[in-house]
Amino acid sequence: IISLIMIALMLVNLPYAPRIWYDEGSHLHVPKTLIQDGIYADKSAEGYRFYGPTIGIGPTIMLPIAASFKMFGIGVAQGRVVIVLYGIVALLLFFLLAKKSYGSFIAVLTLTLLASSRTLSQEGFIEYSRQVLGEVPGLTFLCAGLLTWKTMLNRTNLREIGLALPCLTGLCFGLAMLTKNQFTLILVPAFG
Image 1 (cartoon, rainbow, N blue to C red):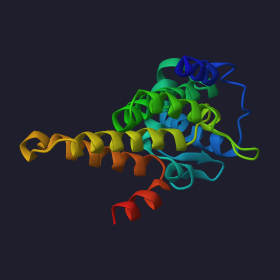
Image 2 (cartoon, rainbow, N blue to C red):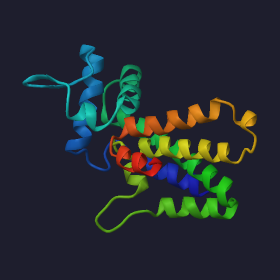
Image 3 (cartoon, rainbow, N blue to C red):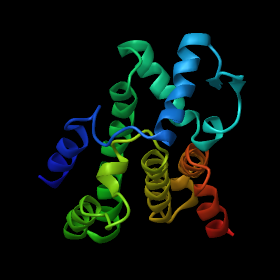
Image 4 (cartoon, rainbow, N blue to C red):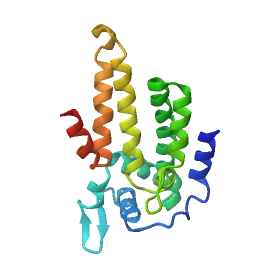
């Protein structure tokens, strides 16, 4: 029930709330330019810029949004729906990670806390799942990496682990850092 409420809150009035702002608009320029001109860059009056929004969030966000633009047209809702999908996957991964680690009660409690995560001055998970920003997609890949890592650590035999789980874990952590480069500030010291 909590997940369905959160998904409904992520989708209601999606194109208009929250109002689009500078960062989100600049992130949408890159997929728009990719669709219109075939160039992975931000287009301005000065020409193509290969910095700024192109390094603020990665191709794990820009390319799915470009695909959405290609299929459904260019618009705020078409870009935001990609982030909503990342949010739904993040909910599922959060739940599975908490359930695998601590059981069903804690998993439900985790979703409840995630749904209510906000402060007076900062937005929470639901609001971030409605904007073209890198936090929720990065968190999705981070949770996927933690889930595969947890699965790997629960296996006792090296033959049981094989190469697929370590490679998938590394890939997920790498995608988290590629998606939102600030995740590098968390993951690299954590592994060190």
